[in-house]
Amino acid sequence: MDALLSLAFDNISSREALKIRKGLRQIEGLLAQICLAQSKPRSPKKRAQAEHDGQRGHAKGLSDLREDAAFREFFRLQEGFQCNVASRLLSTLERLLGFPPSSQNDLVILSTLDLIQGLLILHPPSRALFSREDYLNILLDLLDSANPPAVQSASLLVLMTAMLENPRNMRTFESIDGLLTVTSLYKTRSTSRDVRLRAMEFLYLYLMPEVGSQKASSAPNAIGLQRSPSKLAALSGHARTHSRDSGNAMDLDEDDTGIRSMEEKQKALAQFLDNVPELVHGLREGGMLNASGG
Image (cartoon, rainbow, N blue to C red):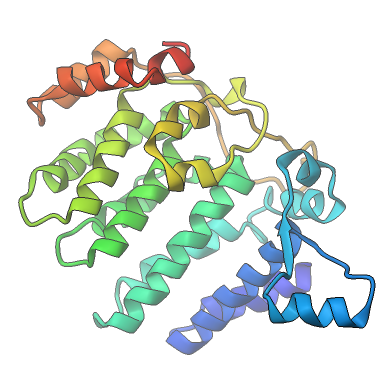
């Protein structure tokens, strides 16, 4: 696994888009091997039929992943700077922002964002990377109106995942005018409907009661975040896993100090948005505050 990651890192560190795409596919393939349980048809005929139908495997449950040796090894490797995939992908994303604008570059950016979101779910401690202003600023830059709606939407998804159960990330987000950026995107008439809905999801998440990272116990399920905003409450209450291997550990400080109340966050958001009471009402009507313990 170390060798495959090293090869992928070499590719995504390239200045050539083709090599970057190759590296992204290598990382995606590794994650697929970890997260998918391979089906094993009994006969060659059934195996051929399964391949023809595209039935290569099914997603493992989170409880299965925690007991899977490959996943445990992958999780252990993520605790060190050398093999932490999320930090490498963020560096790649920053480099891609310097490439000339093109539809092909947008596709590579989308692939990178998708992988980052998945990694933040598989390895929740990597979310602590977003307590750094430079990493959060990369996502905020991608919300610029010059970027296509698909990139803006994917960036908001990563931003939501990075904020889950990480009050420190929230405070960094606030300190670099993240609320101004997201609310401006939400209010701008030229913003697409899908992006506006995604921005509203983020604002709902922002307003919910904060849960300290140390109170969580296992990795949440990303699919809920992508499919339905009504799942945000359940996601923020999910637990997380922790690695006990301290060798070559990253300094992913998960200090829970600085938790703000809902009232404080409503006041902060009200500086940029007039309909904060309506958003809070929507949270209560949807039962999300009750689901999260608010």
